[in-house]
Length: 106
Image: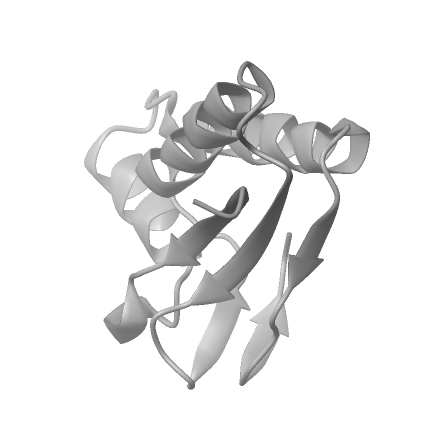
């Protein structure tokens, strides 16, 4: 291994709209890389050339609130997203994003 890790966004039908699961998995992977000396850098990219990320998955948040007005999904999803943004910004690992197509949000 060359020490380069990849965070590949893979929700092409939703233009990689960030949801709670996606940001949680990315955050877990970033923490895993930071706890090993094998990781030297990481790259954020997409499996699709249509979008890197179209922002937060507002459709899922709206659906959750329509189904249950007291749903905590919006707070949980946004908390995950902010934790991920902070983790990327404060990471000791160098990073690069390959932004092909729509690029919004984090």
